[in-house]
Image 1 (cartoon, rainbow, N blue to C red):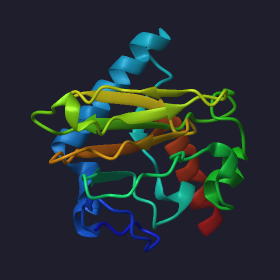
Image 2: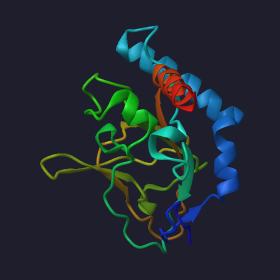
Image 3: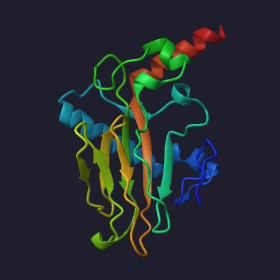
Image 4: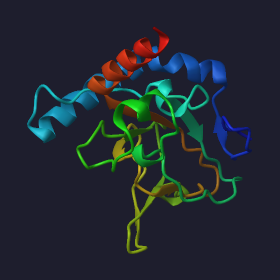
Length: 195
């Protein structure tokens, strides 16, 4: 049983806080960041303004890690619909002082995205365990679990994990990211507050 940062039992298998804390600087995570940045620059047609970075702890606080991992199992209860984050819901602090609160795709501040990486070496479709997305009309869209696959989504997209069937354990690493410009502005705000 995994316990999330708020102490709630979530089911599945999770990573210890020590491992979670070391992930942002792991070479594989840094390479993923580099590739996500290149992808975003390519699809946006803008080579200078997009850089994926870990979510600074100043956005949601020390207890919310920028990288996490989970492994839902067939013994788990159904997972709840949720979002990973939203600039409209940031708590008072350096980030909201600098940017205020805004819609995630409004262009008024850094865009919050999550990157899901399926770490399994193999997956049988009969095991299910897909990531499900809920649109505004209540329609559910299910992804296919592809070993080594990546899903890039806005953090304010409603989604959940489908509980795996039979023996399957689905391993996923999740990154919470935003732009480097935001990190620089946030650091300047924090320095000013300390002076």
